[in-house]
Amino acid sequence: MERVAEREHRDPEFVRKQVAEGQAVVPANRNHDSLDPMVIGREFATKVNANIGNSETTSDRTEELEKLHTAVHYGADTVMDLSTGSNLDEIREANVAYSPVPLGTVPIYEAVKRVDSPEDITRDLLLEIIEKQAEQGVDYMTIHAGVLMEHLPRTDGRKTGIVSRGGSILAQWMEEHGEQNPLYVAFEDICDIFAEHDVTFSLGDGLRPGCLADAGDDAQFAELDTLGELTQTAWDYGVQVMVEGPGHVPMDQIVENVERQQEVCDGAPFYVLGPLVTDVAPGYDHITSAIGATEAGRAGAAMLCYVTPKEHLGLPDREDVRDGLAAYRIAAHAADVANDLPGARDWDDALSEARYEFDWARQFDLALDPERARSFHDQTLPGDNYKQARFCSMCGVEFCSMRIDQDARDADGEMTAIDSATDLDASPAADANLPPVGAHDTDRVPDEIEIRGVTFTPESAHGDD
Image (cartoon, rainbow, N blue to C red):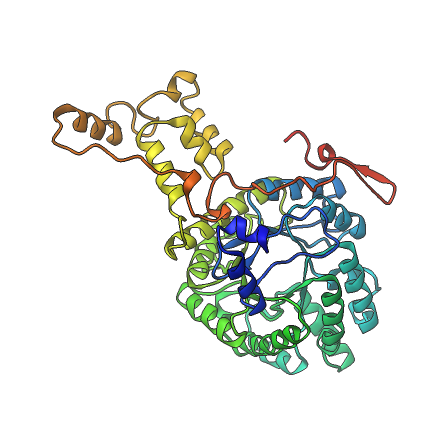
């Protein structure tokens, strides 16, 4: 909690009180030795999660470690390993060993891999997998315990049915067995495991809407009511809880969704996927969802789960991870500025001052993605001499408005000189709202690990970066 307070520029006692009251979580498994702790809660900087993971046809262990490095480098506050392919244990153990940020998983994915058919999943198998992953060091797990048998008929009139992988698997299981959700039945046993290892619940929204037409329906809100009950149960066991939120929601319904979750779940942190505010832009859903994520963050969502350009189309690669994180770091920061978090706008002011002064080097250094900013500038004006130029290729010399303004202010003295005095070193902003992104403490990340006979080093994890 002291480390979290340092990163947030807040008093440690305030952090302790927020966690004790369930208004914030610090996902930190006792077995995650490389972790640099962070906090998720509406009173703190808005956080961003990046989903990575392999499929049966795509990505191996090395590629997944490269994605992990890319996610951390470009500012992910947490990472979820959603692997559904081969070598799940090896990938998970390597991610835990190398990740300075909290790592999340969805245990039911492994359960599906362990049986011939989803109907063969048992309560004991689920508990075995959850306990194993807790022992491996996973910091938080998505548990779809809120999808109940009585909720399923409410999905019948939907356009896209049940779009959550976990939700659809459990619905199939319940239809086949005619029994209640085994994760709901075993919830108190899961609480015991989580309490032992200090794993945080991410209560999954298995009935979240998969299109605008399904947003705010009876199925979504019936599950939310159950998640409110499960939140109280987990708190009774001393287990931290955050609650997952919807994926596709019209812009005008986002604030209502956030406020309803906060009321039903007594202020437990809300963790939203997007939400996407339109369904018409496959290939650009990092944009459609970042728009919704900004509004959700402004309304009180504590963490935003990124969406990449590949959403609905395929498994993201490293460049997709980069683009998704850029969109969501923008959304999170914009929400913090709108919510007037202490010092949040200082970063914007400092970059604007560098831009006005034509200090290209500082502008690049302050950019959310310095490599991208520098590359775009150099595509048209690559020479070193243009790093001192008082124009860029958009307006050229003659029409650069900032150069014209500067010359006018210097000419007759009637216009006041511009003040450029923002000191980021003295800013009270949380680390998440200061450059550079991805500035996690990696001192506890090992130089070399051996997992099931395979040796990994930082170089093998992230190439030449």
